[in-house]
Image (cartoon, rainbow, N blue to C red; front, side, top):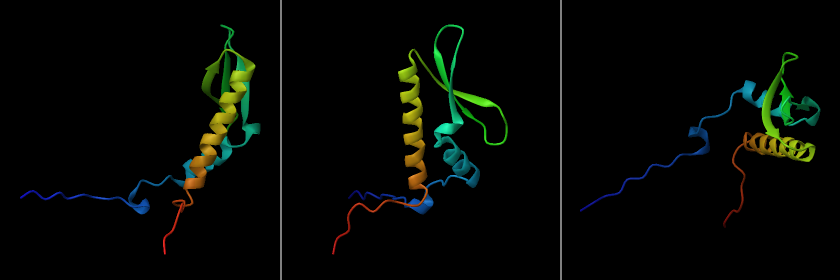
Amino acid sequence: MTFLYTRTNTWSSAPQPTEETIKLWEHITKKSNWRIVQLPNGFLQTEYKHLDSDEWTDVTRRETIDGAEKAIDASIEHYTKKLEFTKGPKVIKTFE
């Protein structure tokens, strides 16, 4: 006879983001902390500003300004969703 043992994880057992990470995500979700720069090869690079300094971190490279701006918008949307899930699991449906 074979027994199958399964293990489940709950929200509390998954690794949780640190306060520092959450602050960074909140910072990144503001479009005013982003910029687009043109590189010597003609490509456009998206960058976000560090929390505590005037340094910039490069994120993506695109061929057009529209592509670069869409990449920024997609990054903002991505980190906004990550922030939403730091509040706990989202209840989709309950049963009575």
